[in-house]
Length: 480
Image (cartoon, rainbow, N blue to C red; front, side, top):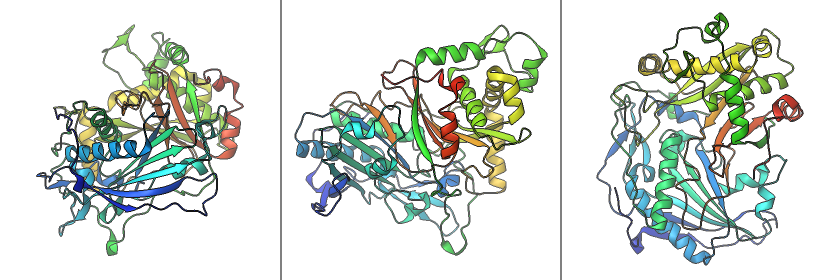
């Protein structure tokens, strides 16, 4: 455990600008200052090698997530100073986040933890209030939310010459604030991202924190490398400018319990075995069958509904539901839950349009469950070996128009642990990073009661039909 320090050295923070753009539109978010922040103390870590789970993310955008808070009730100058000082101490705990990517002569890419610095922005939006961003029964105002984050649509490979993390505090006209965090996706996955966010908040309010595990024991000894001809970095593998609608929908704890109960109403039959495709060990099972989780039940409901809304898909078209699996506890031996970096693999479940329509929620949920249950130590090692045989960047996107990708997790501590000393956050929001038709992100409900918020990014016509689907909407409610 690392104890919070009382103050960071004055030399850590170097102000760069303090200017207000007088010509900015009245409804804009305007940066009024930018500071460089260095770790509180030199790092002894040295180079941290990218693993077989880190390198595929080099073509992905930086992760962009943040939290809205009610008015902190302290002077803004004090607020900025507190955040910056705590950030300096947090970077000392996570030295890799203040480094840069370096490609070695043999093609390996490492994080050089030399404390180069990160950027902290202070922005204001005096004509905007919380109600402009959190609008009930409406799409996310993406033209506004994108300005809550720096480094918009920066590709992770660019961490060779750009900071690996960046931060922005935005103060709204009603006194509410948004704390935005941007991090290189080849350096962190969601687990490590929120671990750092929690650490920063904990140090801000003066509580002990847990350092990350920087050992490279998730296939860190691999010699595989990705070659980029001519030294040019990769681009994202999807059309970032394709038209999208984005909306956050709330699923109450009661609605999710109902979906789970429906998904687990199986009777012993050949149909269940067919849905799973293989025998599943009877651990954590009901009636001899492995229990389908709440989240798998919700995902099955979403998979079926979005597929119904894509009316141009043929009945025999194959649909894919893809989700990231946290491998930390699945390996044998398991690695630390505090492992720093990407320790995830993407798993895909497929079914035809006709199968999803005719077999119902229970069948779809069983398909998802079987995929996740099967992804244990052996499957993880096979996937890593396959990647090492043909190293490549992860093909994020929806090329055939029939895929869904679920990102993030309702298990991430987005609200719990992220109290900077001003109370519980009001809402989570994300930037424009890694969004395409069929991309979804799951957040825990703000109340901490087991509810889930899902951020949907869909083609405009698909979103319109989804929002008119009564079978889907019966489980959607307005967030309290």
